[in-house]
Length: 318
Image (cartoon, rainbow, N blue to C red; front, side):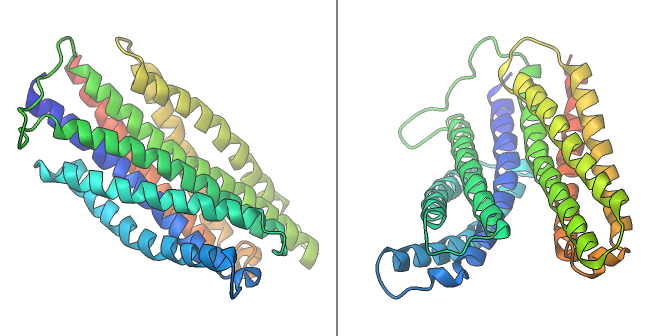
């Protein structure tokens, strides 16, 4: 491998991670303003005021940097040039600081005894906390890739780093595939838990309206279980590609991409049919949640398409 190929490798990885983080930061931002609307958090003094203001900061700055990170990810994944590495480093640092604030506010809200907790509020805060932690770790990983990529350019007081000896041309392709599959899997995990939510909402609708939509509630519950099983397998395959050198996982990779794609298509078909039913029209679940799930499906499918192309490229390199 030469220096240009190493730059492109780090740039692509930085781009795919940035695109994933843009989605996570956007979710955290939206959840922050939702949590800030809890009546019990509307106080005039003390720590509660600080935490409420921090929630507004997470919402405002998060929305801005979700857009900036999205732009940086697109440029890094498909563009060229040294400047994008510095831009991604800057975005990653701000994102890490912002996600630390998100985690702090989530812990404060969870421990607030004045909040009248419902199952929905509890789930929202847990999702806010977990998403913030994942975004924090992903921002750190993005920073490391961007920083290392920048080293392969001449700096003000240093020469560009030489390509280490012994790196096979197929290795960067393998790591990129692992990253793409990992990002697709994160989105699929979200889709799986949305399936569980849809199932419970349909069951609630049936009890309230004395109807029978067992077929849909059962299908979504199956999608939840199947989604988690596929996600675990995908994370294992992703980790093998990302961290294990000198091994060929092409058969597993193709199977994983295929099963993930089939899962997304099945979820989309079930959800399209569900949108015509009375329980969706009665907001159990609300159609906006299904539309959001469709968006996640599209994003996950795009990552799978990139991963599939990367797998074919690896075969050509081999």
